[in-house]
Amino acid sequence: MFGFLYDYPSKATCSKKMSEKSYHVLKTTKMEFGGTCGVAAMIVSLPLTVYTINLACDKESCSITRLPKFPSFSYFFDVEATYIFFGWLAFQVVLSLLPIGEVVPGQPLKSGKTLIYRCNGFHALLISSAAFGLAVYCDVPLTIVYDKFYQILTAALVYSVFLSIALYFKSTLVANYKLAPGGNTGSIIYDFFMGHELNPRIGSLDLKFFCELRPGLIGWVMLNFVFVLKAYQETGTFPPALTMVTAFQTLYVADGLYFESAILTTMDIMHDGFGYMLIFGDLVWVPFLYCLQTRYLLEHPTELTWYTMCGIVALNFVGYYIFRSSNSEKNEFRKNPHDPKFANYETIPTVSGKKLLVSGWWGMVRKPNYLGDLCMALAWSLPCGLNALTYFYPIYFLILLVHRERRDGNECKKKYGSSWDRYCQRVKYRIFPHLY
Ligand code: NDP
Image (cartoon, rainbow, N blue to C red):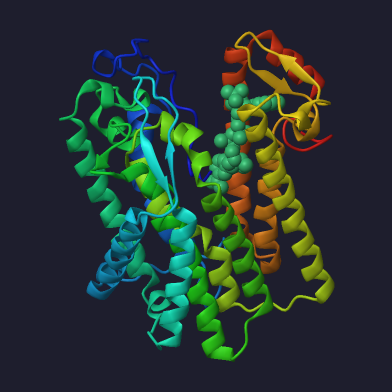
């Protein structure tokens, strides 16, 4: 769901043997992102992007053309902030280990193994939100998180780097069948970035599954809550625009966690290794960049007319409706294509035995779920008015999803051949009806 830079990795080069230990992950031959040099540049430039965009948007001004003021190096490090970050991480680890929530088998991996996952992310969100409320009630000075935003960001970044290094070393010690097909080139830098081991675990704690949806995503919601609290403490009110965007983003995260088991079928879990790209994306990029609009609305309160607000609320909920109903439609069809509710749906058979939906959402455009997601992304920035920097998320997301749609189309063409061509002839538009 929160793919960050996610894309389909290079074509897997794996043997087909089903016995786990005899399964052999071959060397990755095709590199993504410009190979070793490209990922080396990204290892450095991605954190710089997070700092630069945030520093370009402060209380004084928030402008794409303004050169951010970089404080001294020592400004970014703080012991208390480090405790806050690790305390948060430990809290989420404890919640993930609670014996509540469904226990779900993952998709069978190419090694033949099926891993088991406990899906209690939604419970973790509820408990975290209740703990936030309790902390407010007990006058815990939660706005310290706002005051030490950059220092907590730095703690998360340093931890991401250390975890990525540790997991890379760990991956050099594990059996070959545990490696990720997309991160097995032999280039240390490339494999470090893409992730060398597929599903590193500490006991029952699956590190990738845990990081994908918990500390960063719930952390993003908590950062937003802190901004709303800060605004309340300063003004005695809940600023409508800030509160509205916080509610939108909370709904988005809650949806992702409610349908947590859906992530088990994604390429992130099934195919991508757990390396710097996902670790940094999950723990730094998502929480500390996706909260840009809410931090902007705290520092630059925006007055919206009631009809503008209604329009934005409508856009968000239309987006959410398209996103949720199209994802559910496809998931339900994939789970049980014989469900009577699909009796009147038109489909195209494929060589693999699976069918492609040509009715419903999937007959309107090829990626209705991306359309819904993009409507929501826009609704989160519109309350910020015409400030270009606060449109970073929808613009970055549009580029990501356009690229992702192309790559998924190529994969479907490989899987379904002429059936996919027929589908594309029937459903001409990729994401935006009558436009693209
Ligand atoms: P999709 O949910 O779009 O799934 C793609 C797969 O669906 C295809 O490979 C194919 O797989 C199947 N499919 C495609 N067309 C049809 C059809 N007509 N009928 C039946 N099956 C079809 O993939 P994503 O994982 O990219 O997206 C999932 C959600 O996550 C989306 O809502 C997206 O917006 C969101 N997302 C969010 C991100 C974020 O950072 N916030 C990042 C990336 C995604 P098969 O045939 O093998 O079943």
